[in-house]
Image (cartoon, rainbow, N blue to C red; front, side):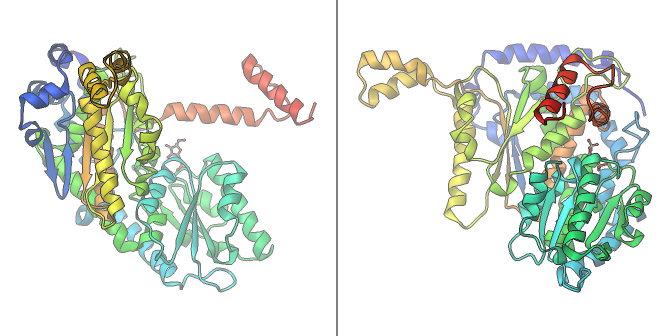
Length: 538
Ligand code: F6P
């Protein structure tokens, strides 16, 4: 696979800088006023969903230059490499072939064999024929996993599960016993099954929770209880799962070529299938596959993930944006931000290029956000009147019979409009006069009412929240992340920084009896000593 160098695209970067300078003095409201067809030209509809980018700070000229830049970065070829299963994750000599997990009839045999193993397990659980050790049916599934073995499945379950599901699905990710005890407070051990989900089967948090879960089962069911009916595992290291006491037939494999943050489509999605059934899970895969085919085949100018990636890149490159907010107007998508934080920040939070050279440009922004409209009554103030340019993604849902869903949609649309339009000093002044303020008061107060406007946003409009549309949504973001990685010329598929954090945690785990490691810094040693003192240990 060829590695394009920076010199091959410096011209397009220069052109883009000039385009940005030309644009800098023009507001988006002027762009809309000058072009009544801006929305018509600057949106894409595909397979039931709509992507509106007319509120991005670009002109047709700038967009054309962005597309040229993408060509120069050999984006088309890079997309081809992903679908071919080439070793994109070259530092770990692995492909990043998550698209194969949802390729339907085109998927490799290993994908079909895992789906074939998942199906009877899910059916037995949902039909009540999977019994716990005392003979009662399992009705409660608890996923023990962290990072990609938690966030994606957790998001999808919260988005799609309903109260009619025969299986209630919970998640435990962290180490604080408050989480473990809280989730299991009212659980019936006889009817609870744990899925231990860990690609490496070496993650401290997950293995600690797995052991705690087994102790919890023994305490409730008796020390000699056969625990196997209460345990399933998903891993790339089946021997480690076997060593923990999980029978081989209850351990589902995860191919090496699936990265953790891209794994919800694999057996890691087992909690999803438990919550919505295999048919729902198949629809989720089908939605993602539809976006995959679009990503692989649509011309770059009409390719939604390519456009999402280009605007993400442009907002960092031209507007120097350091954060990016995800604003889903849906309570059911409340975990989307957390999932996208891992997806984007773990993938593209890098500062060396593919050749290992330190980059001299900004890479991934800090992803943040939350389910709306709560943010409107909290952080939107900064978006309106603060000093920062903040790119935003609005995710709106068109459907829903409840009038509250209409209001929710309108709230979201109103925010994207107001954050783009802003309020000028003249408008603020006129508004104050029209609401009975004296001329003197209006002059004094008007500057405080001015809203900056010009905040760049995209809107993804989904017809409804279904397994299919959620599959589409998540696949769009996965590909957006890859597009940005190509534009930044970085490897989006390793995470050595995270590994460094784990090494340090392991080092500190050996320092219970006081700091002895001479390589530890003064602050860390001081805090370790203070903790011992507070615990009355020294
Ligand atoms: O710590 C980061 C990470 O490696 C993620 O990339 C991954 O999703 C998570 O840990 C969990 O890893 P595992 O599935 O191996 O337990």
